[in-house]
Amino acid sequence: MEEYLENLKSFRSYMNDVEDEAAKRSVEEQMQQTAIDTLTNDLNQVRSEVAKVNEETDEMIKEKNKVEWEINEKQKKISSLETECSTLKQTLELLHQEINTISEKLGARRSFYTNTIENFVKQLKDQQEWTNKNKLSIQDELLLQVEGFPSKRGNVEGDYGFANERESEKMETQNCEEGNGLKYQMEAAKQQIEALEAKKCALISETIQNKELLDQEKKLMEAMPCNLAEMELNALEEEQKALSGDKAGEMEYIQSLQDRINALKEISCGVTCQCGLQYQVELTRGN
Image (cartoon, rainbow, N blue to C red; front, side, top):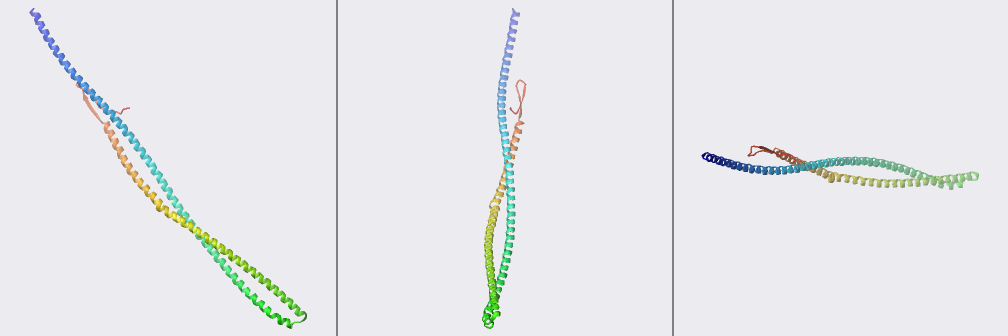
């Protein structure tokens, strides 16, 4: 009986020890479960943060691509503006060359017409002097012949007088024909003078028109470099400077985005569970 009681006592002691051990195990399991739940929550939070960081990284990459596209578009615009500026400079040079060519042509034509008019005027003066000289000599000769006819008629008789009268009539007819020829020459000279005057007026009118055209082209040339070309060049330079500044700022922004992305990629931390397991948490790119 005593042995039974001793065994029962030892059994109760063993059961108490088992219960104590079970209670300890239960407490440890509860603590481990709590730690596991905490770690699970931490992991879920980390996963959420990682997903958020991945989304921010994607947004940064999209923003980077957008900025690069804008930079390329602005570079294309700069190239287009430089081409337009070069074309404008070539157009201005062509206008200068055309104005110089027109000025040379106008000078040559003005010199040619001036020399032609001077030659015509000189020829007309010579012809008029010759006409006046011949006209005076013919008039003097006619007067002498008319004054000499009565004395000759009174002194001459017979066939000789008749022949002399016929000779006088012949000379009068010849003198009339010469006078008519001179008259025709004078009329022709007047017509030539009128034609020269008409040519002179036409030349003056054409010269005035060419001068007006040249003045218009000069005004256009003076207006274009001052009001258009310089403004266009200044605008291009200012826009190029602004684009260069924007490009530098955008490059700095892209570099800062890249640095942030690299910094986010370097995030890593170790988590040790109470059960003895170790976890390494790192940022990975989500698909």
